[in-house]
Every structure is written in C-alpha cells, then in structure tokens.
Length: 326
Ligand SMILES: Cc1cc2nc3c(=O)[nH]c(=O)nc-3n(C[C@H](O)[C@H](O)[C@H](O)COP(=O)(O)O)c2cc1C
Image 1: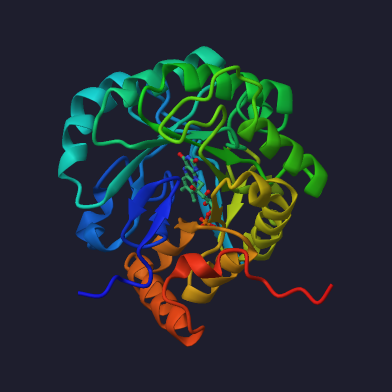
Image 2: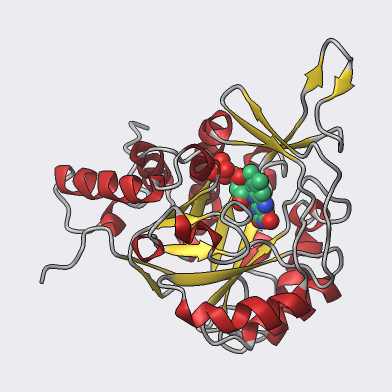
C-alpha cells in the first residue's frame, strides 16, 4: 500500500491528515462523532479544560456575523475532576489522536491540569490556551514573553511524556511582538531539555486564536453579546492568521524547527494549503464545523489532490514553500 500523501507528523506525533478539530468547537471530546467520522481527521483537540468547572459567560454568547462568528463562551467546561472521571477513560477509544486543551488563570491552574492530562496515556499532546479573549487573566500569558516563558517552564516540569503545544494570541500585535512571544514559548530558558522531543520549550506553536471583536444592535443600541465583547473566528480572520503564521515561521519557527499549527478560518482545502505554504505543518478547523461538520474530510481530500498536482509525494514537502520573489 502506498503512503497517503497527507499523512504527516506534528512534533513527532503521527497524524492521519494535517486537518485537526479546533478546541471548543467540537465538544469536550467526541461529541462531533455523530456528524463526522473522527477516524478521518488528524486529531481532536478537546474543549479547553480548567482546574475548576466553569459555566462561562451569560448568553447571548455565540452570534453569526458577516464572514464569521463571534463567541464569548468564556471557557465553559466540566473542569479537571469531571474530565478525568468522565472523559479521560474514553480517550483511548477515540479513533484518532486526542490533544488535550488546557486553560487557566494562574500558572498553578495550568500546571495542575497539565499534570492530570499527562497521566492519561492516550493523550499524547496538550495545547495550552493562553489566548482566550473572553475571560480575565488569560491573554496576559499570551502577550507577555517572560510570563509565557515561566508558564512553559513550569508546565514542562510536570509533563513526563506529553508534547506541549502553545496556542498564541493574535493580539500580541505586529510581527515582532508575536515572534517575541513565540520565541519565549520555544526557548523559555530552562536548564534541561525535556519532553519527547528533548526541547526546553514547547513542541509546537498554534497560531492563532479568535480576534477580540464586538457587534452592536443599532436599534436597541445594546451590545449583541452579553459579555459586550467576544472573539471573531471564521473566514474574516483567515488572511490575518495566514500572515501571523508567515511571520512566526520566518522569524522564529523555521530556524528552530518548531512546527506550527495554523488556525483561523479554514473552511476549504485551499485555506489549509495557504497555511501550509506560509509555514504550518497542520491546521485546525473550528467555525467550519458549524457550517459543514464534515468539512475536515473534504479539506483533507482537497489537500491530497493539491499535493499530487504540486508533484510532491507528501504534504510535508510543501510546508513553508511560499514563493517569494524577494
Ligand atoms: C464556540 C467556540 C468555542 C471556542 N472554545 C475554545 C476553547 O475552549 N479553547 C480554545 O483554545 N479555543 C476555543 N475557540 C477558538 C477555536 O479553537 C479557534 O482557535 C478559533 O475559532 C479560530 O478558528 P476558526 O476560524 O477555524 O474557528 C472557540 C471558538 C468558538 C467559535
């Protein structure tokens, strides 16, 4: 049997396709299984799990807007104990790779959830969400390089075998700033390389999350989200995210050989292909699942035809292969 042109690896983790389900858009673990054959996606990223359960923000907290959606869910989730009791034991039965998403409001929060997930053998990677715009005291980690470096060091310390991905915020404004934050995640200044890839810092960067945004009902003059502001996702943010991947790849990821996961507005295969050319090894799909729950499968199929048309054997050969005349 010939190898699939879209089979790939992310920080040494074998993935059936480079198309992953984004945190918080596919339920806590397997809720998408009714609408999508999970064995045909690269990985499922869990809902972000916090130390304590959270109800999240008041409704309305999801809105369709032109070219995307706004959400202010506020990290509603079952909390670590319920995750470990009710979901973790089922992770080994999920027919694809499971990546555990973690969020928190202090270093201790992240460390405790990371230690819990590290004990689950069928979760080979965790993604720390330092970029949720809908809660207080979370994006600070994604916009303060020394603080992020400390967080990465502390989380690394409790991970015995699990890969560490860091999901960056698009509001670490401008290419230099985001590259600085990315560098802090990759090179946190720990003395000992650790983890499955023997790196001191994270194993992959996830670029990026929703863009802080808001919508107003012009008749009532009220904000349309109860939280007033939310995070914009979907097609509207895709070109912004492509540029962020391009910037981070060229400024810091390429030379340190740190894989990137491109996130933002992937609805069709060519959106995924753009991310790959800009420097991403894999992509995540969030808002696309709301429009067409099976789109990760058509995206992977479209990528497969594209890889063949490009005359290469595997999608990995196209990572970062944007042609620049300069
Ligand atoms: C309803 C909703 C809930 C989300 N919850 C989370 C979450 O818990 N953790 C997280 O890291 N990102 C969360 N996100 C952000 C997505 O994972 C993704 O980064 C973002 O939506 C951009 O990708 P997209 O344009 O493909 O949707 C959420 C997004 C939406 C729309």
